[in-house]
Amino acid sequence: MRRPRVLLADDHKMLVDALKSVLEPCCEVVASVGDGRELLKAAARLRPDIIVLDIAMPQLNGLDAARQLKHTMPEVKLIFMTMNEDPYLVGEAFRAGASAFLLKQAAALELTDAIRRVLKGGSYVTPSAAGGQTNISLRRPEARQHAPEPTPRQREVIQLLAEGHSMKEAAELLQITSRTVAAHKYAVMELLQLKSSAELVQYAIKHRIISI
Image (cartoon, rainbow, N blue to C red):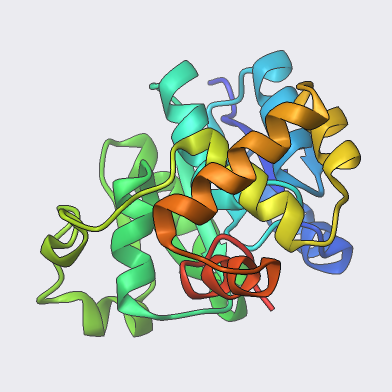
């Protein structure tokens, strides 16, 4: 029987090494990557069955990476890991296409069980995070239905600029021109009524585009 092919995406090498040792008896770990952009490239190249990914990743966070992955690879199973057990984040992860949500503190103990469940078409939420999720709908929160929402590309620009990349660096990473990056930045600031780059960073933190 073919072992499931797993791609790991996390920028903490010690955790990745620990997860590899847990997974290798039952899975084929095809690669590990440290940021969201490398994840997209590796997933397109390797076509894994399962991707285990952190939510807080540099250059492109796990939630936005997941939305792109599910668009191009709808069959892939996504297992999110995070340090944050905020029930709202659980809902966001499943809206982005998750099949499972684990806390990093318990990932080594729960990951193989989560993989077994998602391969059978089920889902898994780490118990300590599931406790607060009971009344949270997986539909988009009503409060956000009328709130302005940046486009996926604008969210990518927000993350790179909020992480401290220059417009030129962001343009190179996104393979667009600096002028286009600037246009996205100022369109977002107008959309969200932000008056400074500092407010843009605050927005990115509040809406979990970046983590601190």
